[in-house]
Length: 421
Ligand SMILES: CSC[C@H]1O[C@@H](n2cnc3c(O)ncnc32)[C@H](O)[C@@H]1O
Ligand SMILES: [Zn+2]
Image 1: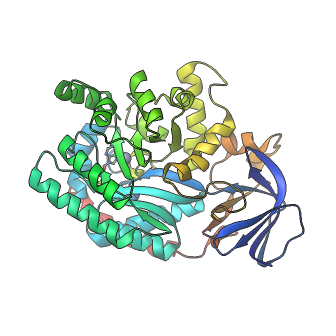
Image 2: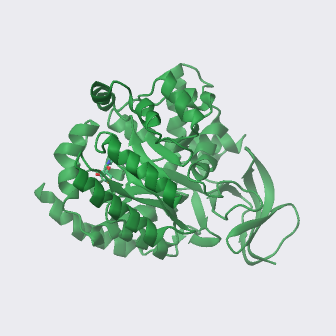
Image 3: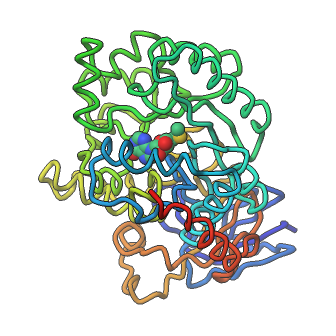
């Protein structure tokens, strides 16, 4: 008898859909096959697609509070004239409710784990604990060339790791970017990450302007320089990685660095189109993220899956630039792999992070090949069940661990103060 049995669904296993039963014991998948299994709790999944949960590999979750706040601007102007000003008004409780809003949206659209880089991170961690969400969290650090600030920031980052690094919540270091963190500071972070055996999540090479400025100051592009100082290792995830040269892509592959690709945000801020196919060919682990809701404007990873595929077709002018299943794997398997978490696949022994979609929705009919249905037809509304760590967080579209109406009321009150900016 399993704790939970998901019966008779079409399951995404090793790149294709097969009918199977899934048995879950505590927080792991302990059976996948055709035996007639039983569970303390059973979900009848005939008429459903069953997938590994999605991993949102780059977020600033509480930026849900700034959804639609500042639009139609390029990154640096957007950050400097709007976002950084309004973020100064954020109090811890605001980050808690902004995170809860983001978590509710993610659970509804099939995300089971996310990686967040922001401020007031204890509040994000609390929201994860209460909602049952899995996460990789880091305090976003920037020294802006000040030694004193570097010391303070490192201390805040370390204390957060001490408090929260564990099983379901992993805590890592989160230097914001090479244009807000000095190379000395980045070296110190690398050293502490090695000592504490934790990873690093950082924005790198998102805009052409940022890369040009970096080259002027350092005579080399960011990835080459980061490699020179020994910063790049398997435990590093760089967000964006749009403006990379061939040599930098080879460095990322050699150092086993993962890249979190954020196509919607990259288009919206007019940052560029990442060289996803080139990275995949070079052997880089590419995973997918939404970035913050202020530059997206949703936390719906299905949009990123479809756009990843479509953008590469146009970048290469080749309709089969990327296989549909590769785009899908980027959103599940590759995200879990990037952060060293043992999930992202429907396979015995893996963490039980699973989502179920109603395959009878009109936009899925007919489903000649469900891989294409998922990659090209999903809106996110088809998700009926979201299971994290063996626990059901959404059942038949009903959120079980968070109160949607309360979140809505709290957020409406919080945002009143942002009108002054
Ligand atoms: C110091 S916490 C994280 C910091 O990052 C800002 N941010 C949000 N989106 C982006 C992006 O696409 N590139 C760089 N920085 C970004 C966010 O507003 C916080 O200040
Ligand atoms: Zn970001």
